[in-house]
Length: 574
Image (tube, rainbow, N blue to C red; front, top):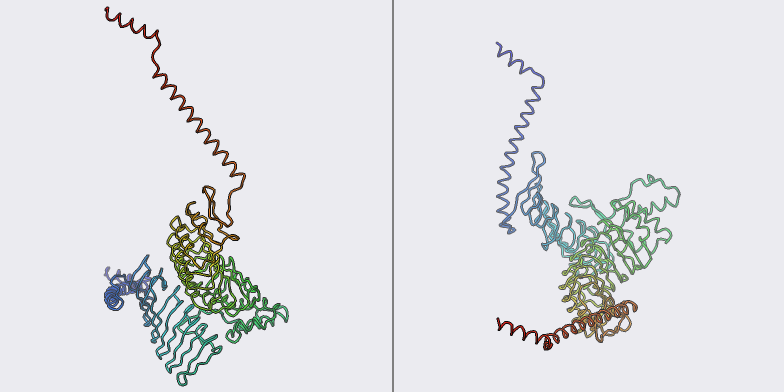
């Protein structure tokens, strides 16, 4: 009876149902964890065999992610710090698959030539990635047979490309966020006629769940901005219309038709309606949008990817800009590759400055690839402190072998070393247009300086007037060799050498930064005094040594001889 009463009290106690429910949930969670662990072991083995067979990946780790009891994705490949890093394969439960390179858990192509992404509906992309987006050069194929081969930006077909349809029609020209927008050539399959004109397709809804665009739509209710006057109301409405229909109002038409005094106002409202731009860039845009000034400067403004795309929108059709300054803008190699398209199509930009942006060797390779095309009119390229290294210098040297427009190249503070100097030296004999070359502070050393001297000496088409190679630890001897190889430099000359320690005649006809005459005279007098003191000291020591030797060689006096004989006689008597 007592046991029955105790069981009855336990059964009727408060919170019993909640405890049992919690115990059931814990048991279910434990069971699901065991089942998930067994499933992960099986999937690890399966993916390892599949990757070894299809992608030649023999080693790797397995990683998966679950949403409650449903698997979201699984990954097999190289890992670092608990996240994908290196080559790997990621498969989503909806059927999407990515095969390629990872950097800190994000899809990014660095070492491999390309990566592959497949959609569940059959679309496939093969090309480069940047920060998880299709960015750079690639090829996209649709299930119905449509193929696009060209440039991508932020996951969309953006730039120069070629699109082929199943019926045989081919379009080659410029794309903007997935649609034809700009000059191009359309070839019809049935007639084989080529149609050359400006194409403006209607922008459709973005596919692939992509939401990144260069220009976001303006607010639906423009009255929410509460303009103070009719002029402001008109300005904001014009900006909203431009933002809503960018394909109908390209930058070149706006540059010609908008009044100069209204451009800053419309540009200010325009960037406010385009979401995602940085605050500093929004303040800068009114001064550069649809501008007719010859110089465009964004120095010191950190540009995001959306800022870069907006700046490109203003520059692509601007035929007034001649100089573009982008110093200290936090640009990387991918951003520089976007500006490469402007250099290819622009007929007015002759000077561009990317100084103090870590574009690296990939940025140098992108610029070199563009400047090797015929029709590029760039004359001056300034790349101070861009972390180019020896590989970047080699890419620029390869470009300068064939480029016929570049007259000025400034690449100081890039640590190109002797290897990069050797590449540039081998370029000099085949280049006939370069007039100004700045190689300061690049750690070239004596080997790099000697290579530059040989390149200058063996250049039959030499037009080089200024060669700056200071602060490279080359030594005075190698510096004199480089200076002697500079010919025809009576006006500009070789700048940056100190030849104060060199003796004899010099084959230098240019301007040299020598020390002041008073300092040289004072140093000469000090050296003469030191030499005179050393000579006097040596003469005094020689005189003392000679006196001592003469004293030892002289015969003893008569008194000493008599005393010595007396001593000998006394010794004999004893």
